[in-house]
Image 1 (cartoon, rainbow, N blue to C red):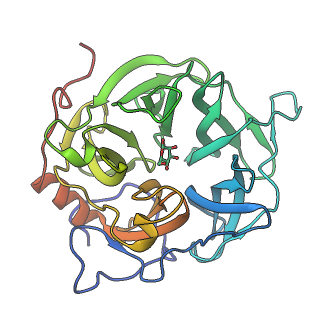
Image 2: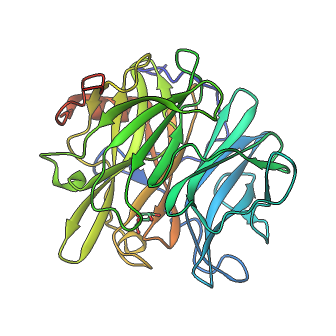
Length: 340
Ligand code: BMA
């Protein structure tokens, strides 16, 4: 019996390791990290910042693969245990609604969300600058691109796993076209996944928490729990040696998720291991997905490490929610409806 309830499916084959005795903080790493190493495929230099979901008793994922040209595309991967992955050899072949090939010029930081019977992919695409791209699939064979939800510039698009008050609901982080030095998380809603509006401010970068003082961005698909939507996100600080990406967590109101109920004052994971501190971009932990098992409350978080590897980390719904509630510090108007 868990103290807090995950309102979702049971996932008895979730990847898992118990908390090691010496672990600090509410989240602990998989001992065999990274689970995806450099050069995983011919002409693919690195896979990181990727999203996975359960599929037909096994697992499937959409992976950010950086080619040896340096350009990122999205690749499909398959796994029986969500740890060892086999990848398609070519990028996902996106089509438009008429069945014509419609490939993005580049694609990165995918999130993968099941809503009713359809899987949606949201990623950062090129639309006269960095913007959100969107596609849907029911079978992971045919991928149809949808209208881009917003004009540029925007990143970190994450859909909620069900409609809220009858509307599809999307978190995003307005940005600039480069390595955005600012940014808060906003929410938008749509009746049809085409027209987006009812924009609300959700969370500010942390005023008093330097680990998230520059910018924040939604990470994994929000997890529906008895306390509200559990959001695992990234927060960025600036140092004289560049940005540092850590992980944080927040709980959003279940019916009105532009209201933040609790938000972790301290990070839940920060770059410490060599595969997080050293790579193509040093000091990055960038969560894009989480698996959860409603029965036991186990959570398995997938994160990109140093823009080079995929890491896996674990926690439970009880540990993480207790940590966020006991450690909570909202910034600015986080607790309001976000409409000033
Ligand atoms: C952000 C995104 C992420 C990346 C991070 C660190 O702007 O591009 O994909 O992990 O920078 O380089």
